[in-house]
Image (cartoon, rainbow, N blue to C red; front, side):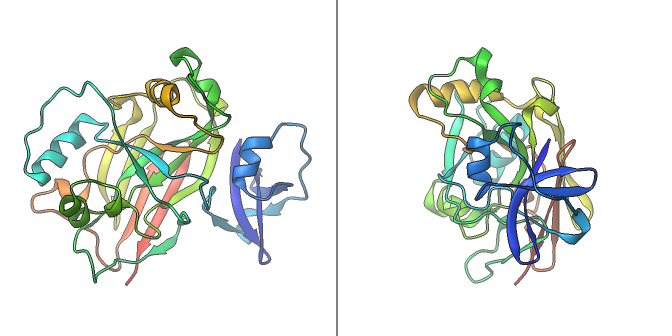
Length: 278
């Protein structure tokens, strides 16, 4: 099932997509839907998707988004080149960081280029895992039972802030630096592990092309490791990392500029489009 947040006739709804229509469900937002939804909930009357505005599925996460850094080997290598450090090869432990999100940007949304503070705006196409129920000390073999579904995240980054401050939090937490969507597809629609083709395009040019089969640390590992020491609440967003092909990986780097369009695509989920404005 595909769940969305959408606006119709100036009113916001959360609901699901079926046969080209959006059907509203009686929840305040996607956070509540994820926590309380079951198949017995009755939907309202459907409306054609062409008549609605698709918003970010989770507009306001309850907590910071959890992200994995350098979780594809090729991206680890290009990151090391950009930052001028040697890539050590083996990665015995996952790298975690968080991303402050006041509001997620919808697909087809406009992102400021922040030209007054950065000349190194970058994109990162990522699979985002949405936790479906309270997770404490989850065993690896049970991890997928705690996944509500998957969506697409573009982990926008200001690279100069990353290198200047010697960590990633500020450089990834500007307002609107978290495009998310266009929908959440429930976990039962995928095999385990999902194994999904992941791509990004800038102005129609293919930049990233990989598969989630190539994750260094997979979804069960991450859920088990995190839930061992912290509670993962329903609607927690975990971004699984990006493959090579981001702007900083080119020589010279190819950062985003005003007028660019970024499309992040993951098979069986959809397309997340971000337009770069002034």
